[in-house]
Amino acid sequence: MTASNDFPARISIVTLGVADLDASARFYEALGWRRSSASSPEIVWFRTADSVLGLFPHDELAADAGVPPTGEPSFRGVTLAVNLESPELVDAALKTAVAAGATVVKPPTATSWGGYSGYFEDLDGHLWELAHNPFFPFTEDGSLDLP
Image 1 (cartoon, rainbow, N blue to C red):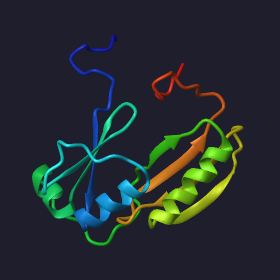
Image 2 (image 1 turned 120 degrees about the horizontal axis):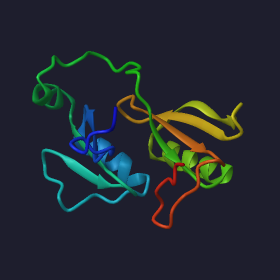
Image 3 (image 1 turned 90 degrees about the vertical axis):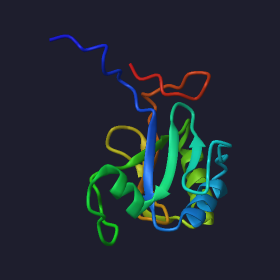
């Protein structure tokens, strides 16, 4: 079976449901991410190296998708990741996240697969992995050059 050209292999936007849009926007700005001018009072956008992160009120995001809103945040079976060029950059990024209000879930450590990785959660419990994978090089624009 061959892949269809009707469904390109890319993720354009990740939208996170948040409890307090302004507080969450300030958190991501404190990471050094720049708010897009496409943002509005209803949704906040951040451009990343190869996609867009959106922040949208949790209950409104659930309503938009046609699903009931959930209660307290819990592990959702999804993590978001930022791959970095060195273990030192992982440590520096985690310090920035903590200073912005993140909670460390798992401090960065050497991994069994030869990398370096740790996790934090944002203000709404979304899990982020900060990782250095020496087997995943970067392109000039900061995208992963996955073989």
